Amino acid sequence: MNELELKYGCNPNQKPARVFASEGALPFEVLNGRPGYINLLDALNGWQLVRELREATGLPAAASFKHVSPAGAAVGEPLDDLLRRVYFAEGLELSAQAAAYVRARGADRMSSYGDFAILSDECDATTANYLKREVSDGVIAPAYSPEALTILKSKRGGNYLVLKMNPDYAPPAIETKQVFGVTFEQRRNDVKISDACLEDVPTCNKNFTPEARRDLFIALITLKYTQSNSVCYAKGGQAIGIGAGQQSRVHCTRLAGNKADYWFLRQCSKVLDLPFKKGVKRPDRDNAIDVYLGGETFDEGWEQLFTVKPDPLTGDDKRAWLKNLRGVSLASDAFFPFGDNIERAHQSGVDFIAQTGGSIRDDNVIETCDKYNIAMAFTHIRLFHH
Image (cartoon, rainbow, N blue to C red; front, side, top):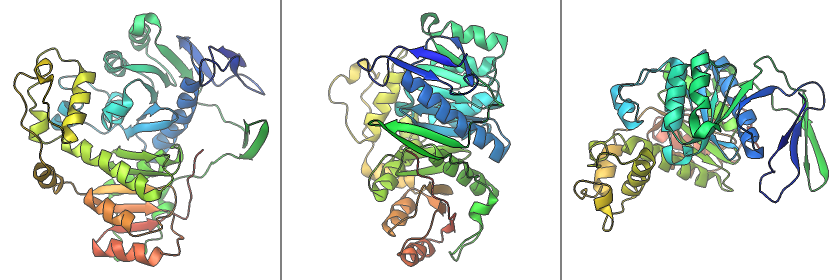
């Protein structure tokens, strides 16, 4: 099949809508449901991301996509008991592919609500079972086990979107798009993220641990498929904070840093021990936790969620806990123009950085890194994505 009619484009008034392959067949197959325009943008951008993560790390990879940017991305490192609790995965059997998706979705559960799930490897039953219980619009993977396909076809009243990607598909070297009747053409961004990206290290600290290298690869590859400007914090084999689509780079750094802080704050005892009533749904928990982390108090309606009114999470509580966050890796899709980005990154435990380099203020950025003993590499690669 080389053409597929869609319900509508980005919005219901944008009809007709379709996708088609200029040459040959479409690289994916619809196994269940009916895809939308944005579903396919998420699926095809996300597939490229997880495929490159798989190649770079040798581990199964997953991404949670919303509106053509990842809310999270991760590789299949095992989950400890703490993160299982934070990600609502206690007692579940998790394959490496399932662990990758649980991590990807768990990084920012508020943003991942209603996501499109992207898997690098076969979707097995453990991954499908986790997907079935979460609010998600669809999934794309190169293969599905028979049991997994049965599970997924029962989701959303039988309308859950399931796409099978051709893992051998190689797109043309030149890509085109139209804006306002004008056709744009460029070479695909086929730059590879590899060890070469971390060879130029101008800071005094030149030591990147194996874990930091893995996390910087994850962050850089994630940025390659994130709407620019963008910054990504990563730790433990996953993105923990992504700032996308901001006009100012320091705003990206702040946005992503705040998400990284929230990710870590969700692991503190005050949050883990919030007295939720039995039966409160996970999306309601996610929303309540986000409100709680924002420093708001539950003055009204708390009885619907909690057995007792929670004590507030104070600014002092947050600062004391966040002092324990270290070993975070940070990547940027272009150069940092000022040292203020490094100052903000340091507040969220960043010890390793990869960024393009080439700013007229590189000296100030390097000096700020040296102030905090941060190891920083100049990748000499820009990763803008629009």
